[in-house]
Image (cartoon, rainbow, N blue to C red; front, top):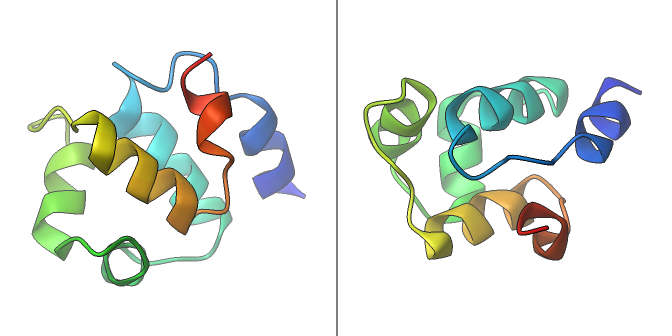
Length: 77
């Protein structure tokens, strides 16, 4: 239920990717390593994004969105 609510609230994902991605990841019950494996990233890259120390590229945002089951078209509204 929390994941569905988080998916509905995707406005502003770009630029606020750290907190939004973390919330979606936690709602999905995934660890950073689990999300990284699904998205084809490293755990350290996920940690950097969540910590606000790395601005994800468009391609990385799409990978994370797909790994979380979020329609990437919603991400870029």
